[in-house]
Length: 454
Image (cartoon, rainbow, N blue to C red; front, side, top):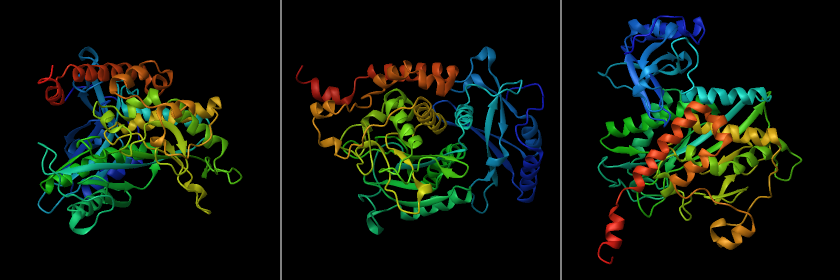
């Protein structure tokens, strides 16, 4: 660990810190994991003993940021992880195993200032903009899909079930139930779960929560899904498109803004039950969809999923029922005004949730602040329209590759505002490097197609 000069850098109340210390002692927890993510969303973790916990809560724990993707260079690499006591949870455990607690950290510089490269800080900054515009809460409800394979060496499935498959077709019902139990044990509220469309594909849906809390839950969800799978001798992956010819895994994101406890998206007098705020928010998402695509679909493989015909929307439009549109407004039910929300369907579950939720929020706020006009919904199945028909309607597409997407992002003032200069510059460099590495590869598809004929 890096040695950083001691300084009171606490970001939480004394009462919150005392509560965690008492809980660790009462439950005889033997180790505490401190978590944060790099800018691509990879989970980073180190462990401390209970004897170090009080100092960690008061002053943070130093570490070498130069070894973390997207953090500072070696000449200015000292970073400090400050545990957030509100995120303390007991990790799933079985009798005979070590009792381990977990806290998610904010990353700060040695002088105690928020670190610009910390994805959690990027989301906090977006929420500050939201609050400055008079809103209280940005609620998020993501639907993460994933695959279960026999191991991580290939894509051998566990079943041939389809959407909502049950019993013998769904080989992982008990595994899903065990995963849900583990998630709920860590304070993650679950609404429902089911088998998804592709073989061995699953979905466990978390109940909506404020954006920062939900981003924390999302990184927790991904780890727990993987750990429970591993304990049962199988492999879970959030890779967007692991199997050719089958649906990929998405992360549909439900969003709503609240003010004084009321849903700011709802308007009973509007024919779509959408307020001017809701319409402008959606218009912002659509206007900036192409330039923020590389954030919510950040890998080369993400764009193997974002193709027509596999339930992954690529056409920039909105609808009330049409699931081929990028943004869908779930059907309004009388008496359920608080549930009015927008669902953006293009993100995938391997994104960095802090950066994704921040960028989506900034795009919506931009629409509200600048009064973007929302065009009429597209209720026709967009996959059935010809390219000429789509152009006539003014419907554009998401980028078709990471290379195209990252160049759109590089020109985006909105994404730069959302991510901040540090993350923006590092993110562009990382994604360009990934794309360049990929496009230099000679794939088996090319050999099979060209070697014998050219």
